[in-house]
Structure formats: structure tokens, C-alpha cells
Length: 389
Image 1 (cartoon, rainbow, N blue to C red):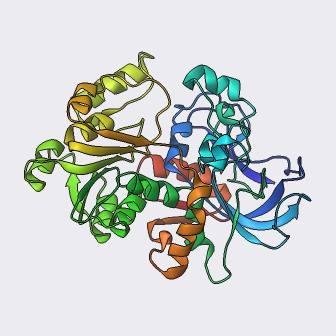
Image 2: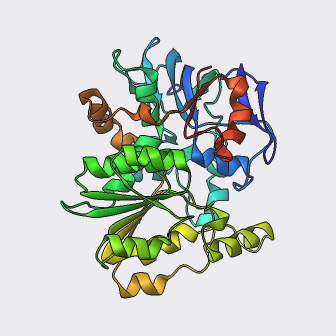
């Protein structure tokens, strides 16, 4: 089959690889009908994610048609259309039983590597390094889905692939980011990053009752899409973010702040961001947490900082004195997608939201390597790429 394959920093190729096969009675094989490039895939593209091996198949936003099922794959049958969560969960362990599917204790066969870095291992993920299981990803013509009785959700016939695809990751992630804020009527939510997850967080914050959403970015197309969703725009290249948020909130600060950027903040978003870039380039640091610092400083006393941007290692110069003295709450996670799927599918079916609004580019797998560059460099108005193998 054809698949997008990693060969090193900035080196992704469309190649022929072996077709997946059933390896367990709970497996399913799907023929991929739509997949997407995620912002967190760009961290792999930029060489920020450790334990990538030459030949690894990428991708964790995938849906398709079931073509083969193991005998214990639940109620799935050949011909079903399904969306596949990017988090792989057994459904039975301590964490899965509590709905914390992204903390599954059983699905990362390389858990010892993760434990050395993080103390404990999270769940395995599709297409996201051998630190998280080494599972082949879904930017391919076919995908093996382990624990298929727990993960995939069936898609109603009247929904298009593009309406359902983002249930795999960015819609649940953006919704979780807003849910973490415990939004009350009349509140103002500030969101850093108007990429796909940020756009979903904007819409989700309004769905959950926010009165105002402040959207921080600098890419014109992203800011325009945020404005179309009802947000008030702050361009960090032309405005100083902290005093602007102070002005917009009568000096109190935002009720909650969402970091939807993570480890690769724009180098020119502040002096500290320049220092972060130098540190990572010279191997004196692992991440660039400018946005997290700013979110902490812009959040009101006893507010919430919600973190869904990806960080991988150790963060420097985080203003914990500010957070402690002002009573901030931090909420963060890799999204336990399975927890959110039934409810968010219901939102789409009811017409509360159509997640396909974020798509700007549609392509084949063969065009994928070049579109990784387009997406990373924010060229051609690119906000979200969907590929149809």
C-alpha cells in the first residue's frame, strides 16, 4: 500500500509499504477514506519528537471503511464507516475504567522508554514515535486498528467523511480544552493559537457558554477564520498581548487561558521566545514555552490555564510564582478521545457544529510530503489538510 513515511527531519515520502494484517482477535483493518495532517505531526516533521525510526508510517487523524475484523472486535462488521481515535485504549485497565483512555496502562508496548522520560507511560498513539508504541499511522491506504472494540465509532450514513474525520483528534481536543476551563456565563476565554485545534476550541468555548473569546495569532487566514467564529482577534506581531488583554477585561485578566500552541511557539513572539529558540537549537533546552508563560501572566486570579498544545520535555522559566500566589488551576492532557466521541458525534448530528469548516486543502497521499511543508510554513492560506487515499 501507499503511505506517508518518515525518513528524518523535514524528510517525509510517499512510499510503498507492507499492507497491515490482523495481529490480534480484537484488531480491525480499515481502508482509509480520509486522513489529515495534524499540527502535532509538524513536531515530528521538525525533528522535535524523539524515538522516530526510518520507515515509520505517520498520521493519527483517520477514518475509513472496515474491510477485515477479528472475532473479538466488538460489534464492528465489514463495510462499517468508522472514525478512529488517535489514542489507543484497552477499555479495561484502571484508567480506561475511569474514562481516562489516554492514560491506558496496556497499549504502549514501549512503556519503559516513556517511563524514563515522564515517570509513567501514557497510552499508545497512532503514528507518533516508538516512545508511544511505534504503531503505524493512518496517513496510508490501510490501517490496523488495535482494540477495535473500544476505539472506533460508527459514522451515520448521512454524514460526510469531512464532517466526521476530526472526531479522531482535533474536535475532541479543542472541546476538552474549553471544557477544562469550567466556563460560566459571562466569562472571557483567551486562546493562544488559531490553528485547527484553536479553531475548535473557539467554537467549543461558545458552545459551552463563553460570552467572549479572545484569539491570539498572527496568520491572517487563521485570524479571519477565528473572527468568523465570533472571536475577537489579537495579532501578537502588532499588539502587545498582555496589555491588550488587560484592556479588554478591565484590568482583571481572562477568566481562563488556553494554550493550543505548545512546544514550537513563534520565534519572534517575544524576547523569551528568541532565547527558547536558541536553547533548543544548541541542545540546552527541549521546548519553547513562550505561550504557556504568557497565558499564566494573562490569566485572572483564581482562573484556569488549559494546556492542549504538545510539550515533550522540560520547560524553562515558567512563572510558577505567579501561578501559586494568584491561585491558578492547571488542566492538561492528551485527549481521552473515546470519552468524548458519543457526545461530540451527537453535536455534529444535531447540527451544533460542522467541523469541516477548518479544511483549506484537499489532496492525495502523493501530494502529502509537499503539503507538510506548506502547512508548516503557513503558505497558501493553509490551515488544515485532508488527504483522500
